Image (cartoon, rainbow, N blue to C red; front, side):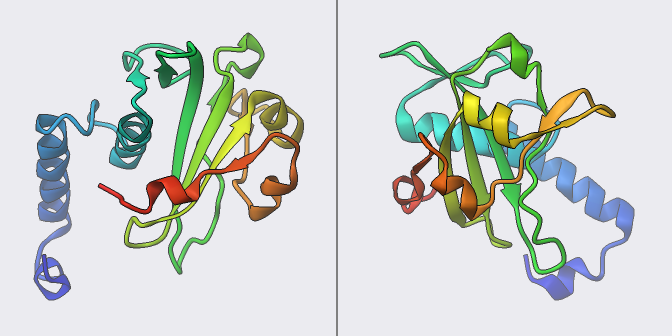
Length: 163
């Protein structure tokens, strides 16, 4: 949709359009909830790319399982923009419960192109992440320096043919 057309819409109309987009993503099986569509899209993209099975949305602590190895993955996505270049991922909860083996972090540019994808062992997330007492979670920034940590893999190339 052309930006000049979007500028003619009221805030309520923009929100209604957003709702319609989310509903369409759900009907296509890409989004699974009415929440953050980037989170749902990222989970779908990663699971589809690797042939993993998505966990039910109500499952705590992981988002997908590799059926070949039974390895569990927490999946997080972050869209950077000129206004907000932060690489802070959403809260990682119940990390001490050892629900997941690896975190997959996907960083998108403003046009939702994958700029960086990393496979991060849970132990690295625990060590490098910062505990937030406010949200009772671990906060992790998916910075380039994470690639220097032992066990972290750059898996960006596997997302060049993006959906």
